Length: 441
Ligand SMILES: Nc1nc2c(ncn2[C@@H]2O[C@H](COP(=O)(O)OP(=O)(O)OP(=O)(O)O)[C@@H](O)[C@H]2O)c(=O)[nH]1
Ligand SMILES: [Mg+2]
Image (cartoon, rainbow, N blue to C red; front, side, top):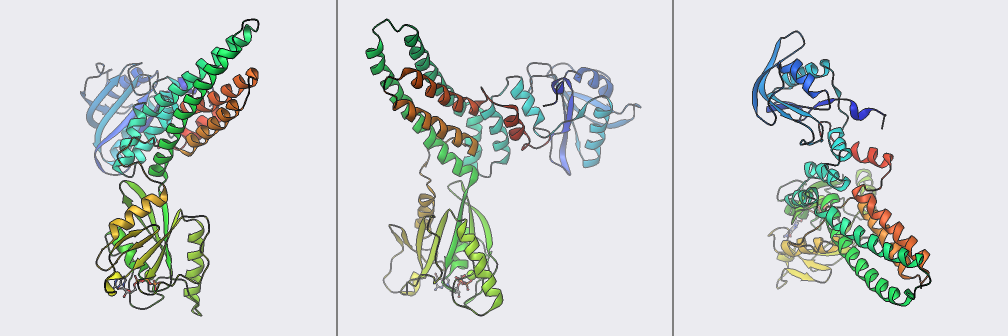
């Protein structure tokens, strides 16, 4: 971060580009009172919606709208903040921004408002990330989960862990300071109990975070099988719309086709691919090469076969990803009921029978089990930190009365967890996080 950055006053258009009902220019920094006087003619009363004329340096009217002034520290950033809500035209909002910049503000970088909120202690790091996650949330469940993180639920869970760790460290270090006292035995029992409880809580947070990370990152599923088994028909069924071309001709699909869907709020990318078989047709061969590339990236593979003639594709399927065998076209075979049996689901893309069972199987294969439970919308960074803490606590548990080493492992676990909320974090980490925000946030 350039030194003195926090003294600058920054401004940006906070509403999306283009036409809209309202266009908001947001200004934050010590210079806000002076800039308000330059653009509005006066500083509006604190926290009162004030109808104002927005004018440029020559006094020419640019727009009329609502001005809102939030004195420090009771603002989003913790600094003096001014919001100018004008008419939402692309040109007019830019003119107002220009007037604010002419009056002495500089253009904000992406995420700079939230970064300032973090630096001024308004939000911790996990909460700041939740702001971006709430904006990017692709489903109600993801939004709800992001809001919980923003309200501090995730941070609170991490802080509780850190506090318990600190306590255990303090007890251990106090004991080390008084080696002559006979406390080694009692401490050993107490420490073992406390550590076991800590590890259990960490596992719980980790499980909830893994679930939440599915809501963030989504699941990549690939439909694969021989030509004509009904892969494209299944994609259309799952998407609830006629997206892919379906014909009675084998070899219809060539390009891999993707559709974003949701199942119980979990974002799922479904990829329909060219059927796998021996073929001399050049376009079909290229299509199959794409199928293999898609398969290599799949989180879950749906291997589609036809009821009554369960032929799996000739091509080898990837080893790693979980697999669901989808027996399609059961409407064509007498006496076959839709439903699920282990990793195999009987469906009809034509009638829709068995589709709910298939959706359930997809969620389960993807590792989603949090129906109605609290989950933490964790990022990769959070998961890594939680894993690191887990490894450290394991190592601590393996120390047999080597109290210096025990305390050191606890310290490292605490450090890993601290990075989640930003209690300890390097500047480059901050840069990485805030650069992903949109401008105006
Ligand atoms: N009766 C019946 N016909 C189906 C069902 N699903 C698909 N079909 C028919 O099977 C034929 C092939 O369907 P597609 O969805 O194009 O099959 P595909 O696997 O995508 O085929 P390629 O793209 O060629 O690999 C079409 O005529 C569909 O109408 C089903 O559940 N029941
Ligand atoms: Mg197809």
